[in-house]
Structure formats: C-alpha cells, structure tokens
Image (cartoon, rainbow, N blue to C red):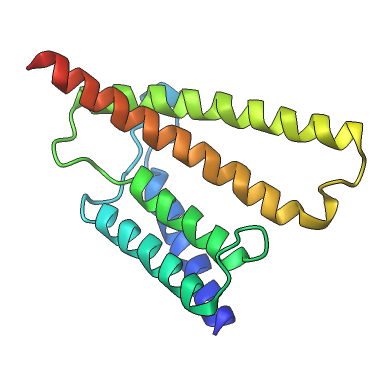
Length: 162
C-alpha cells in the first residue's frame, strides 16, 4: 500500500513541478518569469491531501513524523499544492507578496540548514541515520514560513485597507 501511495505522490509531485515552470520563454531573469501557478481549486486538493495523510497516520497508529516518512512526505506535498496555487483574486499585489514570501522562506531555509550543519559539525553523524526525516522537516518548515508570511501579510494589508 505504501508503494502505491508513494508512487502517486512522486507522479503528482512531478506534475506540479512541470506545471510550475514556464518552458516557452527562455530567459534567465527571474523577475521576468511568471510561473504558471496551479488553479485555485488545488488549494482544496492540498487541504484534502493533508487531512487524508493525518487520518491515515492516525489509523495506522504512527503520528510521529520522525518515524513516519509517509506523514512527512504527505505534509510536504499538501503544503506544496497550497503554496503554489493561485488566489481567488490573483493580482499584482498578491504576486509581489508571493515573491517576498519566497524570499523570506529561502532565508529561513538557509538559516535552518546552517543550524543543521552546525549541529553536524559539533557532533558528527548525529543526523546521518535520519537524514531524510531532517531534510523533509526543513522543507516543511520552509513551506510553513512561506505560507504564514504570505497569508499574514495579505490579510494584514486587506485589514489596513478597510
């Protein structure tokens, strides 16, 4: 059962990545690229996927992310779908907030990777047996920072407008 679900996650992940990158324009300027985001309804698919992963892990009796790679991968895929879906009213302001959120999340990823590397230097092989788990936790933390910054900034600006 886990191989079937894992295969579905891998195929879906590649579909999301292929949809995100525009292949028509061959420019190296990042600010001139406009990524093809997923449709708005994919947010609900991502939320449903998160709900399914949590329920499946509860039924299996293993809700510890450090021992359940399916839970970590499922959280990652659900957050990926939510993060790269369009908003209902996607305008230039939302695109600007999305770029700032991506910038902040990349800074947090580098910060967390530096902390991870520091622990590895202090005590070698401390994370080597659970490297996949730690890497997935880094990616999930990065997506959580991205989503929280994006929605907090978006709703704070909408509240200030009213």
